[in-house]
Length: 224
Image (cartoon, rainbow, N blue to C red; front, side):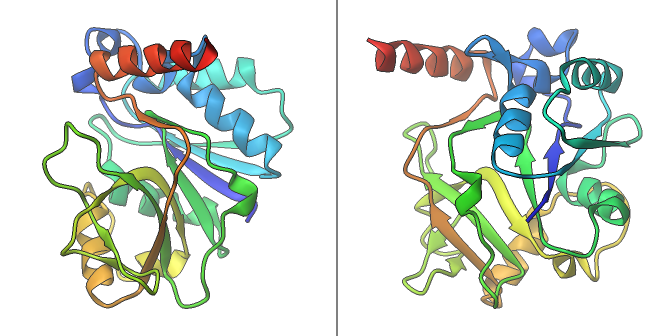
């Protein structure tokens, strides 16, 4: 796989007050904006083309990426209307530039040390989802993982990490507009078309100021 999409159009309400003036993709972790971590990882993993969607304060994302962009990546911006198109609508809106081959998506507001060179899409899958263990602050996870590697909607021991591989065919019957990808993911999970794996390394969801502080604290503890 050579193409990736960074989902950076969200408003980031829970990350206020930072997001009152900046998009969440520019939130700094380990002295570097989150989107910079993703771009660096993608470039080092051999990806060539990155689509970045944006809506809220998208001009800041464009300026930063154009300034930071020194890794040989082809960057394509996918602008969205005010309020954004959410995950499903945002990906469908960019399908014409994502191409006909499998691609990955990364949520802009996560940090993950997954080795992208090892990421693959099983032949029978329309999508392959990277999961992480349900954290203590979540009472219910997103998915279970069956012994054959397919996702299920019943066990809910794991949560979505924010990293997925898709075939374009996943969205074959999807319409344009504003909507989440989750209902379609659950529908195709019931049909055993979705596989997954559990990431055992470092992962943070930078959704709130408290989660950002926890991530920084964990980094300091690991450095001791």
